[in-house]
Image 1: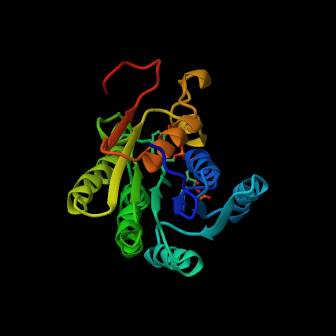
Image 2 (image 1 turned 90 degrees about the vertical axis):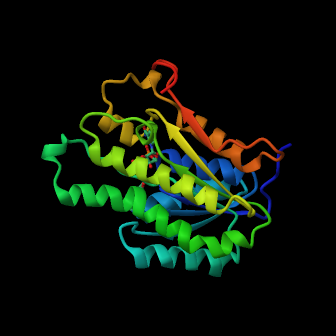
Image 3 (image 1 turned 45 degrees about the horizontal axis):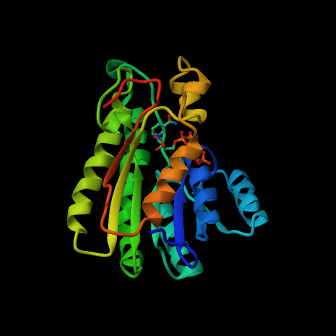
Length: 242
Ligand SMILES: NC(=O)c1ccc[n+]([C@@H]2O[C@H](COP(=O)([O-])OP(=O)(O)OC[C@H]3O[C@@H](n4cnc5c(N)ncnc54)[C@H](OP(=O)(O)O)[C@@H]3O)[C@@H](O)[C@H]2O)c1
């Protein structure tokens, strides 16, 4: 019960590195045309070159996710270049590590802008294209801290709760449509971000970003009546049931 993504278009934010890059490579390998979005054009081009070298199709589209106009232009670019959108992966995100009473309002705002406001704007702007797809998916990458809270991560935790909450409401709004909304809540994944926030965790105990890409592939290709709205993905070395 697996669908080939041939002819489908997927937009992935944060595709210049880390989890987003792995998701882009994986969806391209399943046949989707992937639109790679982030700020660093050179890194996006490197990902695109890797995809085309493997006979995949990729389009590079730079975006600044703190800027609403830039986000709207990204969706316009997708429409103009491909005429469709089937999969939206809101993956880009940033952290801010500080005690709440040492968190500047500007840092709070930036985390909320990139992690919660940008996915909201992207969902809203992409809906007209997604509604035209025979089977569309929105995948929002929250976090373990979208479910629980960690010290020194109040802004990040709030932003991931916000993204998860928005996703649940949107899924209700779209329940009788062709569009499904999924949330992924991973624990620490082996990327630049985890290296900065959780240097205490040994590299071999981190989740491989390829494992996250594999789960995204499952969600977007699985056909049938079984639906997983949310996946909570913990490190094997951490305690069960967060
Ligand atoms: N790594 C973990 O342990 C972990 C665990 C749970 C959830 N997550 C979530 O998974 C997602 C990906 O994390 P990651 O670990 O892969 O992070 P990462 O390696 O730091 O990559 C972050 C991505 O977001 C993009 N980005 C950041 N700010 C942006 C902006 N203002 N405009 C456009 N793009 C921007 C970056 O691209 P540019 O710099 O090129 O713009 C980059 O591609 C995030 O939402 C994160 O919160 C990560």
